[in-house]
Figure 1 (spheres, rainbow, N blue to C red):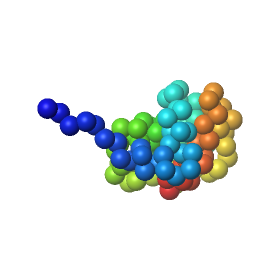
Figure 2 (cartoon, rainbow, N blue to C red):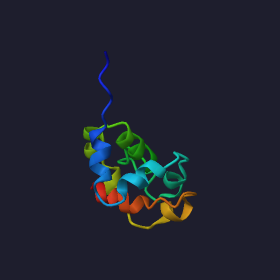
Figure 3 (cartoon, rainbow, N blue to C red):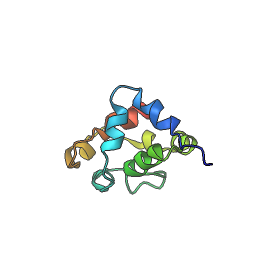
Figure 4 (cartoon, rainbow, N blue to C red):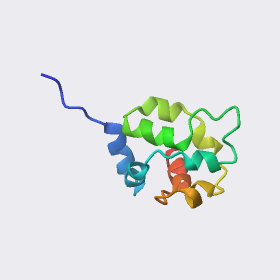
Length: 96
């Protein structure tokens, strides 16, 4: 019998204010990364939609070792372009 899948990392993120709801709102459209001024920087390993996907998949170590959160310039282009108005900048800063 298979154990039920548990995503403790998503629960951990959910406990931090509204971040968990914001992460779950992401529909993986990629507009955030397309509008980000750092998206062509060689050090940017995972764009925001990938970070959100990894959180939902429970990949705690990969997210915490990624440098995408530290590349955020707080320009809010991602928020302005997001069709769901996910405050990507707040999530990136919250994880970092």
